[in-house]
Length: 510
Image 1 (cartoon, rainbow, N blue to C red):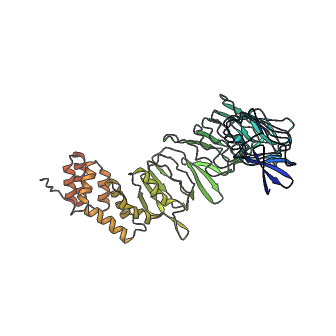
Image 2 (cartoon, rainbow, N blue to C red):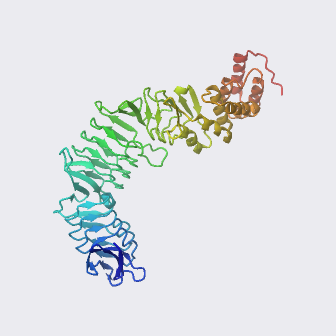
């Protein structure tokens, strides 16, 4: 195309023996082409037939545009060709049209399109889920049952002849039966059908595509057929009402985040949490409250399913998948030495996590609680992009953890961070050790007072375990506890003093 020509207030690209509608004149928009709100696109311009309507050609053409009649010679309509026309209610497509771009009537009043028998390609069919597509009975490429849009395409195994590519349910319709003979559900096919509650899948269905049920936020009744072999990426994205699913024996492949990104933004919504697997499935299984996948020699934890506060990842697990613990309620997590890979954001949204036990380093890493949003900063050190590898063995980024210490302010958090590192000094530099010890010893009286005032026996116990409180300093700690009016805590610290340091005489004079 090498020439732009204006005709009747429309702009056309000319060349190669044909014309394409490319836009609207800025000075005389649709002048002569629009009559009583109806735009009749010319069939020819300058003696050349109009064969195409370009992408966004009539984008925001005006509120006066109510109907568009596409001439018979047009073979292709580009993506979003008629988008953003708030008064547009009708589009007439001609026989001879072969390619329909995605979402050509998005953000218009159009509720129905009639597809001629010649349409062979529809780009991103799910972009028409908001309207009714009536397909000509003679069309050899597409068919519709009035709600589902199906592509006539046989699978290589010859077990099916249809692919579900889109679904439009009328308001109030909550149940849909996918047609017999459907072997695949395409990407995004059921996008945003938010009234859908029950979906019945036929025997013979083998594949469910990426984001197939995305946004079906009321879907709660779904049974996967035994024939299913493949799940795409995030097929249940935002299916917040779908809590239970059984994986069939023939399911061998599941894409990224297939079972994890299924929640809404309410803290108590965990999405899919009851996942069961047929016993003879050779790839997927549930062990110790987690959905697992065997990928050759790699044993992958896909999703934690339970609500326990203390959890040990199954021994032998080699990988923790991305988002595996998304929004879990675990406070104390044990990572076995068999783990060599942790996916990005595997621990994202673990608002209650306090302790990460790393078996290979004999380390109990404390996760500071305040401010809560900084937990993700500490957890970043576990993910692949932050990990260091020595002799092909994964290691946490302790250097980043130690560097963050001085930026925290809450005594309870800092005590646990410092003492935890001193008790298990994996990769602890002399500089970091000195910073920890200096803070603990120089501020011991203040620390003891803060912990005692909060009734934090655990924090005081950690100080004792780390040797920060010894025979020379224990009386200072006892005095701080006594000043805080915590009789039970005082009784405990006195017992600890006697047991650890053998001191019986205590002077409480102030």
